[in-house]
Image 1: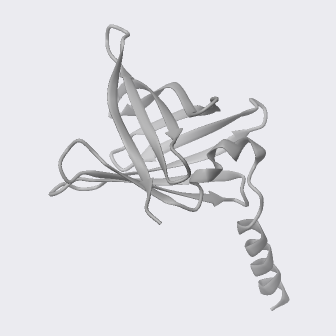
Image 2: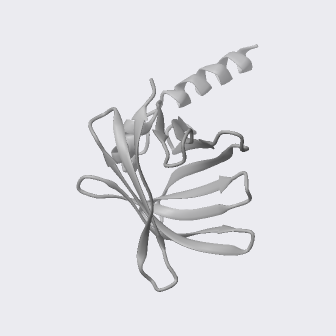
Length: 163
């Protein structure tokens, strides 16, 4: 019985632990869900963020809902790589795609430098910028690299806190 109680206390402490200092620029996202209306009528994009592993990582559970279509869903796990001294992430989604990359804190935005999304043997290079708008919204701006090497807007949306 003592082991169960001790385990419960340790688990409780881990949930309320301070996150890694490197996550400070992303802290406003944690504990909230954020939703945007997309360009397709009725389509929404929702991200729900939570601290995991005692603040050692930040989880983003992501769902794009489109009327009369199956949900497109994925999960990103942000973690601090102490050897590289940077926040990195791995993204996995229900269509078999994956992506690995880094996050840098800019002066007024979270920057996700160019990286690749790979699915079905095909790769696409993309980059993203999230710009907070107060504490209740952030703009997500995503670009993909065209064959000519030029960057083309993939989407630009305002995600609003839903709680």
